[in-house]
Length: 447
Image (cartoon, rainbow, N blue to C red):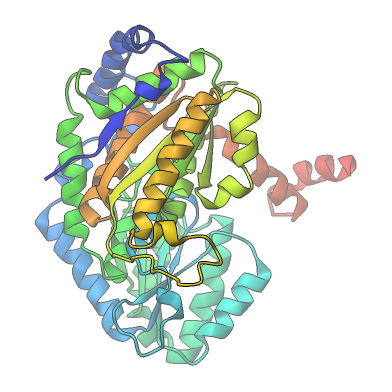
């Protein structure tokens, strides 16, 4: 079986191989801190060995809960924000039929997983509730505390709707809570109402939690093989466990930090497969929240090519040279579509007749990489053999491990997020939340 590969040769016009390898001692020390918990944020290293510690019994429990929801629901709403939804969304979108949501109601190939609690959109929530009227639906609510504003609002609304449609007793059988083991409002409610529950480990932060029930349960409900996903992560855990030489996660972390130190402040994650759009959204949170602190950090951005070549291509080709690209390249597609011959050839495309669409896409990818490198944009290329559960599991763990290494190379705590609280304090003060009276007076005086 092939593995994910990392190629950095198209960065060498901006940084030399020697500059990258000069970071090997720092990377080795970072790996040591991840292994022995001697670095900053050591209370949140449960993800490091998580894949190899997941038991068959744990996966069976998740699969059973997923089956219960699938058997009793046409729709399952996964409620969460940030790391409590992006990982599951990334995997489900990466593996799904692109038009699954438009298939006829009777298409039973997949249970429809819908996401809520990731925004405070009144129209979004109203339209979601309208969709679910009179329909069989269930809820997976994901929150350590149960009091995070966005998911708490969504859960309050949908819980009330489900209970009004089914009654409290029956509704409780269609609600699964993924929360803290012992503390918090959601844990208390789940205990009182008798919800099926799964635990978010205390030592795994939200953006690293996709391989816990936070991600695995919605993915299983959507009908995908969580055992293969975990197996892929285990493969990458083993491949990145020791040593810097030959370690793809260390190579990626060292290269991006060498580029950062050489003045490349923005990393653009590029995909040429639209199914990876939400994988890039997950990646942006992972790296942005882990590294953007203490006045430091590579800014994580993303584009979908070739689509965004018609909007962002000009800036990337000729804009300020403070960027580098990391290209996700998928070797094999799941389907085969051949471009036909047209006798009139009015579009001038007969030179492509007989070629697969993916062949054209691959040449667009190669041509774009060459153009951008020639334009002064270093490129890291990550090759994924195919979009399967196993390879997405590999890719998830690869980026997680590289993120831990990279954060320590940067000199920050990769596992906290103190800056996230600032907007919450202002929002609560503006909404006159009890306990924020003094802050409310101060902030309203500014307006």
